[in-house]
Image 1 (tube, rainbow, N blue to C red):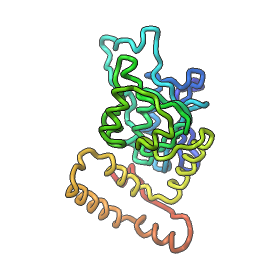
Image 2: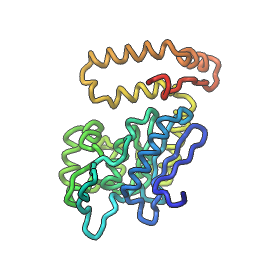
Image 3: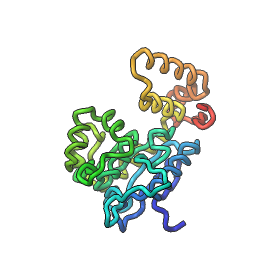
Image 4: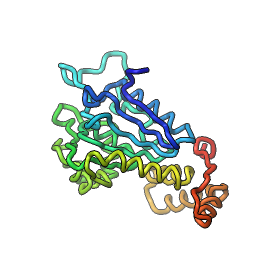
Amino acid sequence: MTDQHVRIEITDGIAVVTLSRPEHRNAFTGRMGLELGAIYGQCDEDDAIRAVVLTGEGDVFCAGAELSGDGFGRPRKGTRFTASPVEPPAWKVRKPVIAAVNGHAVGIGLTLPMQCDIRLVAEEARLGFLQVRRGTIPDAQSHWTVTRAAGFAVAAELFLTGRLFSGRDAVGLGLASQALPAPDVFPAALEMARDIATHVAPLSAALSKKLLWDDGVGDSRTVEQLETSYHVLLMNHADAGEGPRAWLEKRAPRWTGRPSEDLT
């Protein structure tokens, strides 16, 4: 297809996923949500993919939801509406997902990166959860993801004011880990993905990510039990020997773990 709203390119274990409506500033559509969910599912199931980078085509990451002349419009009768239109979300993908927010990201254009594990943002990008200024509320489970990332106080201020802020501000607020000049965002994300694809054991990444995102892990005792059970699983896998051996031999590890098979 030549008119896809989301593209995927896979090279050397890295999937680059690109929101691809540059003529519309990558505005989000229902079709984009379906395509992104299908691609995330592909990334989750393909064990050859070790890391994922999500970015936007052109100089904007995503300008929010595509608006009609009537705004967001009403859900049509007989159709199922969801405020979380990407399934599975990025946090369910058993690989690290890095958002390379290369330009402006507002509304769902910002709540989608909040579903990723790591966010790199353009320093001067304009960011904002603008939904309350458009007559709706933040979406894509952001009342959970943003509160987890930055805490209640930050989420409340940004959600209830709908104000704009910069990529540099996003780091100070706890929403992103790095703010870089816009041309450097995607290369930095790609370099991080390459490092993960080469050096990080896929089963280790999948299990650590599961612990980080699992909302049922609410106390230290539960964490201790899960960490112990995951350690036992990993210590009985060949990768637990390959990692130290590769380090001692000063070479890249040859991982054999397959999350789609070993973690079912």
